[in-house]
Image (cartoon, rainbow, N blue to C red; front, side, top):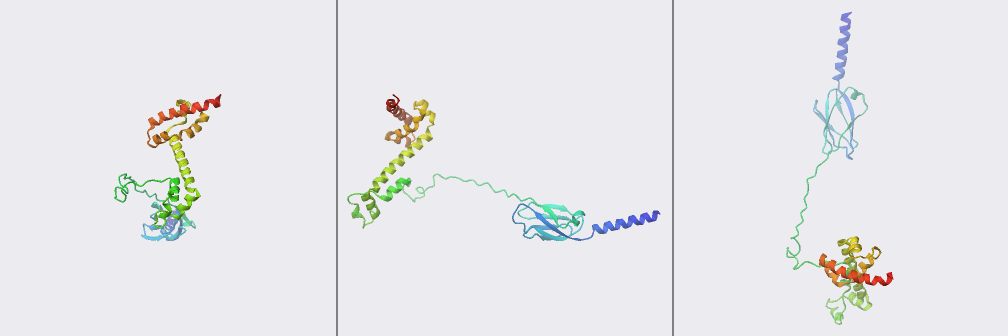
Length: 253
């Protein structure tokens, strides 16, 4: 009886050993969030065999229980798995890989303020920056009594002559003045908060916008704001506020 049991145990052990050492054709699939799943290398560290995945991340190779498969590519983190007995019974062995995060080197952008067209000798002095209204006026050109004589010499364009006769140049000059006042108003609003006008200058809140329209008409204030002279700008606005409030009194009464 004992001999029979030993024989059975021996047979079972041999069957299990033969199953673990038997090569099986394994079909696998890579699961990853990257779009390109091809060219992922699959290495069998025991047999030193290898293969690569196709466009959909599928691969196949001969393995057996206990084999270590290594998945490696430029776009994914390297991963090792050990083949288990259950893996050989699956129709498709799915393996999830993690995308590789490529750390970019920090780029420092330096601003070289001293390097410009003047310092490089391209210009003798800094080029003037024109606003849209200034560019339109420059294109229209100003008319003088001798301007038509300069047309053949290229001193004045025919368009410039037409613009002057039609009055377009005068209209563009008005547009330029309006644009300057609008830009000045924006500068004032950026430099001073609303409570400055209501608390310091005693302008009613509903009249603050009206005061700004009144203030931008003042050439002295325009010059001070453009020169970024904030203290003198405050002094000038205080004077203008006194005059503006005096204009409001008849309305209040």
